[in-house]
Image 1 (cartoon, helix red, strand yellow):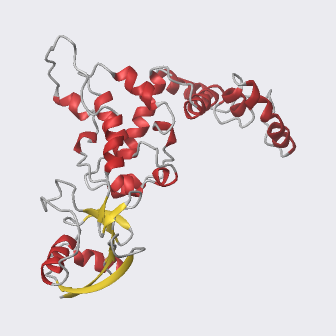
Image 2 (tube, one colour; image 1 turned 90 degrees about the vertical axis):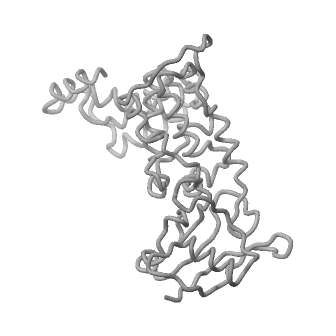
Image 3 (tube, one colour; image 1 turned 45 degrees about the horizontal axis):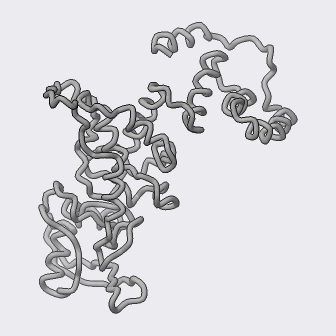
Length: 311
């Protein structure tokens, strides 16, 4: 079949801004987007610039935006894209500078990977520690990442804050923080509490949707947050919100919107004073529950669940 490909072209030596060009190529029933691009480069446009290597969804090199979503070109079937979108529109990954055509500069991506120390901090005496299959399963597939950059391209937090470590780096950080052989868990978690760390993820879930290896980066970030709170790292606003929410529900059986901001800010006098007007407005709007109300039905069973979970 004859397929129309709309490609974003950009040569910094000739073009002021990127632009789209249309091409027509022959594709078979099982052809992938990468197959079509290779044929296009060989037969029509030798200047087309792109990355690819294994052609088997292993290396992650051919990650690009296809019909508005980051995907591996070697894994994306043309017939499926046409059936779903009615077109094939291809561009480079977002959130990274474009070098030429479909190739982006991934230096910032690799720098953020390096920032989380992507290797084990082994014991100083060189002791060898084996890892059991059951322990490996607790990585929750975080070690399956192929560094394709699709999750970073889809990350809304990275879009507004380029300094954000990003889902790929944080998922890899969980893989090492959860490894029993690693001797730097405490320092890893402490560094992730800083700005652009685990609490800057907005939980949009886009990284989970686009990951070609089901790494589920956002879920790994949530696990890192739990690990940090369990380690006593509760000073960050997001951590205080979670702990305050949990304590209120444990005590009252449901969220008390009047107590929540007080529990989060009582150790910060300036912030505490700033929320007083908000408290008054909540009171006038009927958002402040009566302080001497009876506990909700089933509160004992609810507290039993907390006790069972060791909360």
